[in-house]
Length: 137
Image (cartoon, rainbow, N blue to C red):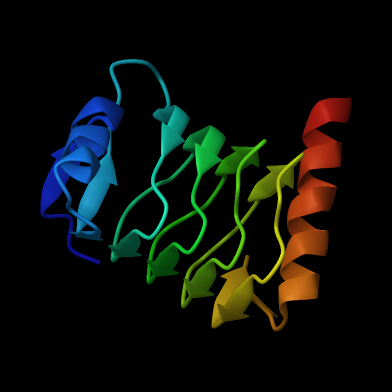
């Protein structure tokens, strides 16, 4: 994975508002410890070869979005619209999903700590259990 662009959440949202729907080689950065995307609409986006390590997605509309070959390790999706998303060839170690609409998800080539995640149901179960675990800590 080659990171070509560092973007803040504001820059990403601005590009989306200007009509950009394909983001390739992007790393989301923040002035705080971990980047966050909060209260935004990013439906229909394709993220390819992007770096979202430890990103917090909260109240984000990601419906009809595709993540291809993205690093999604330790990301949290809370109160998000994940309907009809596609997740392809991504490491999803410790991904957590809570209080999100997640119907119609399609997955292929996902893995967590070297173990393949072979179905949408297995991915959602894995991400939900991570969310429960984090809340209890």
